[in-house]
Length: 243
Image (tube, rainbow, N blue to C red; front, side, top):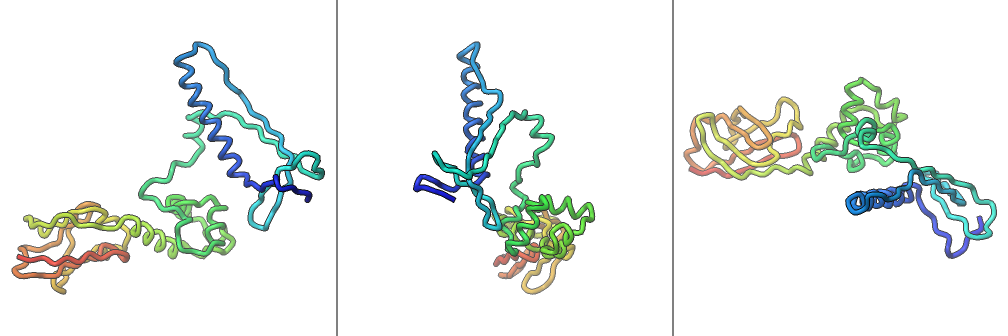
């Protein structure tokens, strides 16, 4: 492939992202002109023809734009149309929420991540939807992912790493010892969690929410005691409580 110092490789995703950013900028400009001008102009469709040399490294395709007089280049055509907000809502997946987990951050083999992404499974919510349909995950990932259980453990661990528990207040109430804070009960464990102990003695957890835990104590400890709460398999709170 003939090249010069001015030839640069580029990826299709970066190229399209750049085009979309420019088009979004035009839309913002038109929003202002709609206030100041009773009549203006807009571009209905954009068509681009590029002469370039495709390169494939076995994983991704990149392109080198052909320079003047270079022969043997392929023709790449883009036709950009418009899409309304209602169409986006009907067809596009919802944005990743704060309490969701992106598969890309999980500590799994790159081949497994690529197989999940190829199957359209990009987040923990996607995985839950597929599992609820009883889809054979080994089949859709060509054996790169064997079952759901290991992935579920990694997802829960990742969630807990992002949402670490904190205790901001401790008090006694008629219902027991109350711990208040953030990211306490996230529902990441089995029915055995959360579980608690005071000075090595097991005590029941009668309430567990994201911001509040209640330990079934009839009275406050009479002397300094160690309170430990295993919120889930990935987080343990340890506090020293005195009279």
